[in-house]
Image: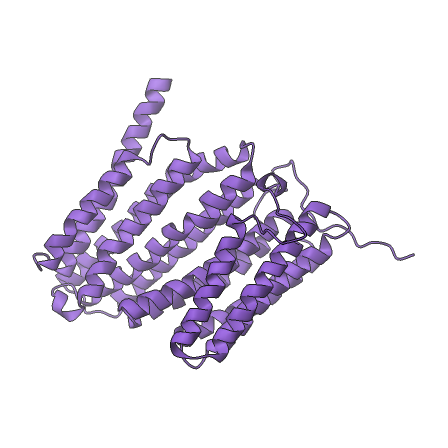
Length: 399
């Protein structure tokens, strides 16, 4: 009689068991490249069509990363089979990221095939390895595999098609993948899963998503430094460099000063951490990461063209205001969901209103790109300072 393979499930209940493993951080390096490719693709195609295409590619990249993070939340990444699986995903991720700039041109088939293979292959691996060790998890991943197989057909078909047909097929694939968790991976004859069955380690999930925020912010700083190094150092470019850096600091402060830690504590002590992980970390973090990527594009444009909007066009204006707005909206909703507030933080809402107020001023060309960058960064800094002071007063009152 064949001896069953050892379980790959994570051991729970200790500080060591819920830490992020070094191999997970190594895996994330591929997504530093992916985020860079996305921001450069948006910068090179800064119009409505380019923005929509980049959005579609971003949704795919994020879904690939977050699904893998769910897997390493359940399975031990320090076990050899898991490491091999992650290394295989890294290779696929490099191929996928390399094809991003031309995904809607000659490398569409590469993107579609690699993405489908990574999603389906990883899911089948988990379904097989959990079959004898965790019935609920095994059945859930069988459901997930069936959903991803449907979307995978569309990813490959889209890669074989061209133009609007490719875009339509890939939109359908993304819709299937994003609807699946919301529908609890329902499969006729098998039923659906429940969030209470997902048995998420809240600390690990919170830390993984916080690390992706760091990846995106790091890419933003990388873009700022590389662009500044290639410019003639004048008063406007030096000022734009400082403003871009302060904007990154403000975004870090808004997310990490208290929000990330409080959210981590909340999900660790939640009665249904799976539900919170699905909404707060799987869906809402999309807005946060997208906002950082768009801000990186805006910073690069400001550094390259600090004086005249005529040099960069209205799409750049939209990026300079839309990036911070997306970021504040995402963080506000994240904190609302995770911290049992009656509503989103007032400071974040005020920041969004102030950013909206810049729209007519910008359309009228009353501000230069540099002046607009200074205004948006000032708003982000105001939000960071406001919330920090407000929370400290709450702590003092409670104490």
